[in-house]
Length: 257
Ligand code: PGA
Image (cartoon, rainbow, N blue to C red; front, side, top):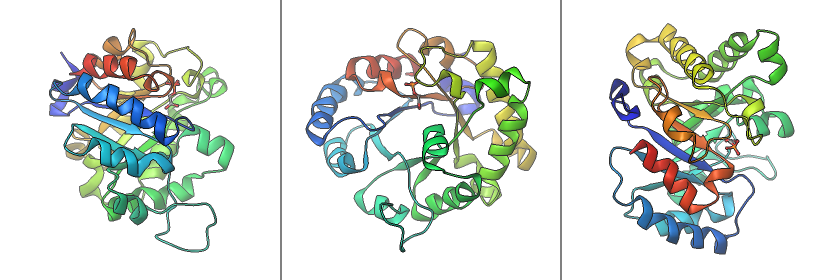
């Protein structure tokens, strides 16, 4: 069964550039990417550039199948929050979605579950598609605490989301031990955790959970993408390192199309 057929959910292939690429480098990337993904069918392709390249990428992808997402945002629409960017500011630029709760933001920049509780509905309110990231550390997995961690992060992150919108939320399961390490989760580990994440959404609404896209992230590359995307509950991938090169990112997208 292909990823595209699982529950009728369109797979999402999202490239998280992190703090990489100037505007000039982003333009070079997108010029190389667009012809490589133009003929793909039944797959959503998104790039997540740094804030300063968002406007340029929205302009350069207009009329194409590539969507542009931000990597983070503040929960308030405006206010005294030096250095932050709000959801309405992203919508104004034409951004389609936003990554929330990436483990790097949680670990290095103090992003909390409490803030994420507000960020997910704030993204919806502004018309942005939220991609909520969750995942356990290596120690948590070894202790047998993976499900406890996922339950906490998913329940907290979605606590203030109206039941009617749960099917529109995207959740990215990203085991922290797999991010940027070259150690990808086994298909069994990915499927088990992602099915568990979907079951957590189903605790609130079985019907909505059929529509919620749950992605895998952590050391995805063109060699391992097809196997992950073929898993019944995996609805796409969030790609870091391998999304920086247009050819390898396009190859991952092609594995879903
Ligand atoms: P990686 O990063 O693909 O480089 O492991 C994934 C992520 O952090 O989203």
